[in-house]
Image 1 (tube, rainbow, N blue to C red):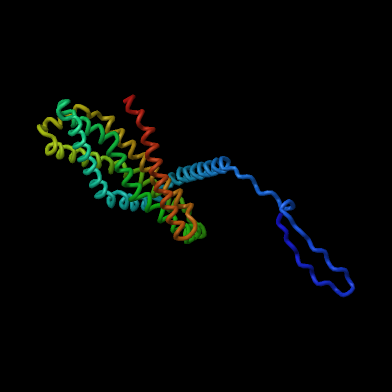
Image 2: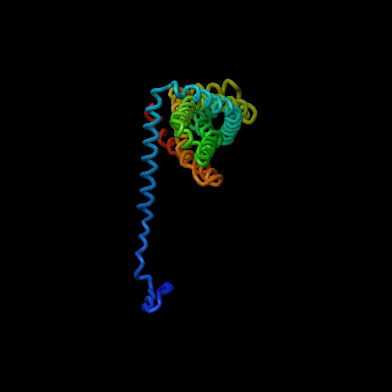
Length: 288
């Protein structure tokens, strides 16, 4: 029992002294029960609702390209050209590793041209898109979340609204459009760089490998939908990275520490989203 004494107020001469009030824990209102599942479901539904409203706003603003096309071109330059060197380096390393591992696993047991086929299949359908996506999560997603989070905690978003500017049309739509347009070409360049590195390393690391043998393996596997599949993944990855980074960045709060938490949350969420999209795309290879 918790007892709290309330000091009596000074009384006027001749009046009876005021009584002391004693409060115990039974007289306090009960604490609300903990409902972790309900709270988690509520948070999830709130996030889904926020994403739906944001997607609807973006769809509405897309009908007015004059409001965002210049900013979208600027964002495309930042996302595409400045990310290209890192994408190429990572892709070359990934192609080199794929070729070496294929050569180590299959040399002596199967024809050497199979190494070219395996490298092509791995790079076009999986390695090129996912490596490029992961690079852009750290290069683009983190930058967008940190930038918008900083604007939110410093009340620049509120200032835009006060000036009559829609922050979604001014900040979100250009980034989402740029991501959708830029990531597929980056993935095509990534595929080309990875295949070139796989060919060059196979000539050096795999005994008996020739350019004609490797190219025969590439041509044996290659079919148009493999490249289309890679481009579709790229467009989906670009949308997911920019959309989630913008949504999470606009929810930033708590000063500099909050911006750090926002950036971390954006990187984790976009990485998870890319892997989920990757899993969802895999069944398409059965039908085409």
